[in-house]
Image (cartoon, rainbow, N blue to C red; front, side, top):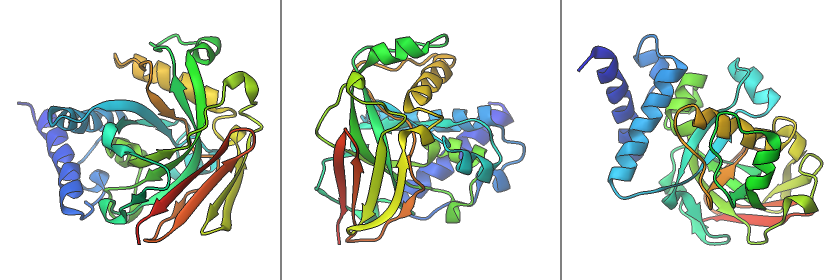
Length: 263
């Protein structure tokens, strides 16, 4: 086995160990020399293979780094993606155990549920629109297995795009009934407003994020499947989480969703 392959497996093992131990690992970019973005996705996929081998299933994808502010912070000009596993999903209002996560934060998103598969590269805007069955209000719980969130692009990509979990609202809305670019959101923590934004904060439109995702994973041989959930990116900055917190994201024309964390 080549050294490069062993390095990628070691890095994946370090992240998997962080899940098990509850102790974050130092940034991979400080531990392993010359890791690139392609290496980071290979590390991510190594973990996904481990999870699926254990009986978990992929139920969708998330897109991160979609806001200009976050891209500037990390010095990048492109989003990234991660995999959503079946046990990432929590029902609205069910208590979410904070102890499952290492360093959780939350953010409101407009989730897509696909009615048709999307296979890139070459997916167009109109094809992406045609593939969407409906949208739902969503709250994503983001988390990092990297100590103190000291992440570079490579670190977050390797760490499954800092995925944690998600909660979906229960009222579906058809795309033709809403303008996602102009859809406003009010995000509250324990009834206090912690963020406001609109769908246009996500690459100009969340649909653009879906197109980017389909074409990016398509180039790697992966399709987006019917029934899958896509979290296209946050419309506000992240908010930290503490035990006992309750967050609600209210989207104009789409509805609201609440994530409640066990005290």
